[in-house]
Image (tube, rainbow, N blue to C red; front, top):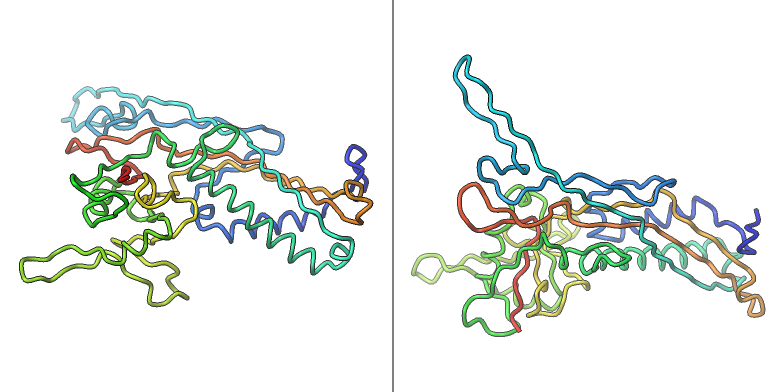
Amino acid sequence: EKVPGDAGYLVGTDFAKALIERAYNTGEILSRCLEVPISPNSNGFAFPQFNETSRANGSRFGGVQCYWEDEADSATASRPAFAEGQLKARKIIGLVFLTEELCLDSNALEVFGTAAFSKEMAFTLENAIINGDGAYRPLGVLKSPALLQVPAVGGQAAGTIIAANVVDAWSRLWSPSRKTAVWLCNGEAERQLLTLTLPVGTGGSVIELYHPTESPETQTFATMLGCPVIPSEYSPVVGTMGDLTLCDFSRYILGMREAMQTAVSIHVRFLSDEYAFRFEMRVDGQTIDRMPVTPLNGTATTSSFVAIASRT
């Protein structure tokens, strides 16, 4: 089945499907996001967001309020206020050259193709979910206006994470997100997390905040305040904003085209007897929430994404 403009032929759809499935299984962040398919005939979609900045009466969902009324009392009308979020199918492209010998060996193609590119696609996409600036790529958590930064403790040394940082971040996490949130941290930060404790009374007893996993088969990650701790290459160096972040990725919407385009050409490196495999994925993402929200009682805003401010 020739592709005239490419002088090549299509890669099997089963291979493309296996590549996407492997990417999802590889990505700890990717698999936690809220995925919405983008139609193959569309370049993206718009979705409504509640224009909510406060949980005070009359402000929830941008203006909805319910009332207690006596019999025959007149009802008071209210209505939500909406904003519009947009996702467009951004493009990730991968290109690999394989010798004819490897291509003739279907097992080798599966190993080298799906293993390498599924991991690289997951890495590229997850890095954008955390650090993307929204320019021809997803808007990442650390660049999102929904991110809430808790300040460092007065007098705190540069490059440190202390127990008060963890408690402050936890206290600002939107309460419904505590069921699904995870801690995302730079791998080097775990050395400090292992030592974090809270004093109990005056007798010298302490509560350990970080609990290493005792059974990797049933619990992959360590936990802190009940939430998994995921070491991540995407997190900035220790002391930088984002080195330790509380994230509820179920509040991150990921729009993905259902069909992944894959093609191969025998002509790009004809003289060296190599095949050129090209993989293209169309995807975009952003946080569902537009900004931190003030709770019903209290003045400290909360969010589904909370980071510790810079300590450099």
